[in-house]
Image (tube, rainbow, N blue to C red):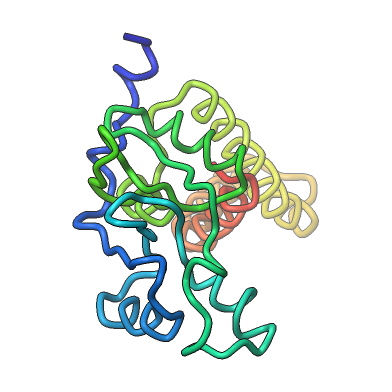
Length: 204
């Protein structure tokens, strides 16, 4: 077993289940009703019970509504995304994320022996691991981004302070340190939002 699989969470621990499916012969209208009923953003499309594609809100928007196609007359098989890109339940999150990046997708049906077990989405990962998961590359990238955020934010604050405090005396130095500490407390929330913005920008 690879070290990455032992360290990283596995797909089966993060995926959403049970999975909602739709037959390929069903209409887009029926598929839309099923998604609304179950509160999901996508359906695995099946052919005689075998997974063959995926139908998502994006497919609905881009391939049906944008082209003004009739929802009742259009079958799911005509507008679904295929071939179906899947992951196994024992795959690590790192492997799953790399697969998503490679195919430019945000969700992966989870299959084992051609049996549907659940769905893994980027949203699932972010909700369950808002601070990331154990990946050396991700940890190094996050450290770099956090350092960048700290330096740019607090350096800016510190520079503003220095503009108004010239030729510091010992008393002024101590006072400045106190002011800095107070600012850290007061602006910590703003810094946190700034840090989250950078993390989202760099996807860490």
